Image 1 (tube, rainbow, N blue to C red):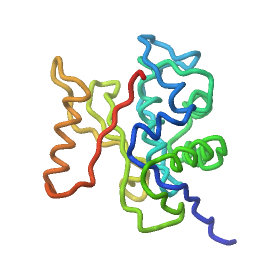
Image 2 (image 1 turned 45 degrees about the vertical axis):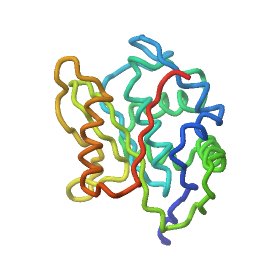
Image 3 (image 1 turned 90 degrees about the vertical axis):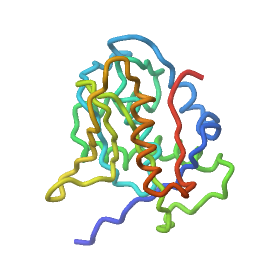
Image 4 (image 1 turned 30 degrees about the vertical axis):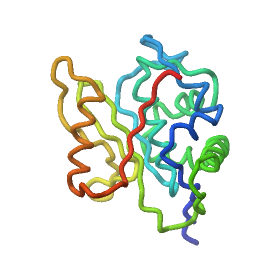
Length: 201
């Protein structure tokens, strides 16, 4: 039996303008203070996708941010809501498989990748070494970093990095900024970091 060929998507540019140009990203993201998300029960268990698609980390980071904030975000009917509904009870590996087979997401990702300011890099270019992750506050009020590409012990998928519990009055932005600064301080001369937040447009 032949080995399964890895699927690649074109890398996304870390540019909020290019993401906002794609209608599916823009129209579905808006904040509401609701305990339920348009019929998707807010189960408050950390939602993680295993990244099986090369260069899909940007789209996966957006899904992680949405799916882990169902108590704050209402989605219009569309590809994000549909995918989260279909995968909310699946494990990270199965979610990765379902994303890999989702042509709607592949098309949205491709349009977003082609709308940036930088020269587009070929989807199968294996020299790409930049990466998107997502920061969330979990059900236990911990600052959590989600990375779909990480593996745990014995090859098990574990892309959930729990940094610490938030202090009273501390926000996602202030707590995540401290972690990001620590990452930058490993190589202060680098220009390979950028930060985006999801919010109302």
